[in-house]
Length: 83
Image 1 (cartoon, rainbow, N blue to C red):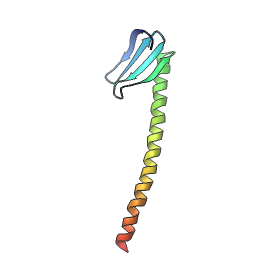
Image 2: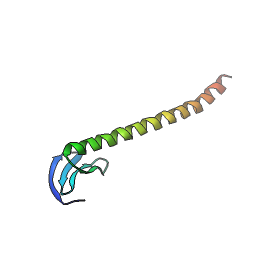
Image 3: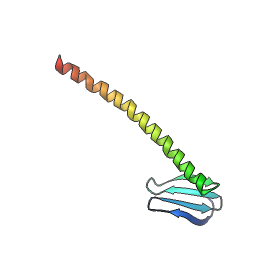
């Protein structure tokens, strides 16, 4: 991590700071950097958005797969209770 220069954006949930090696975006909620050494603040936000889109896609896929398994499991008992 480079040397701190200045805060560019600071909100309740995130901070974009300028460091000597670029712009860093820190997510206070998740306690993690979502962008490091970005060339511009816009690039830092784009990196963060890309991360969250990727994460959302993984979560939605995992949810669908789990939902299919749960539905299959529950359907075994529904069929047995009517027979």
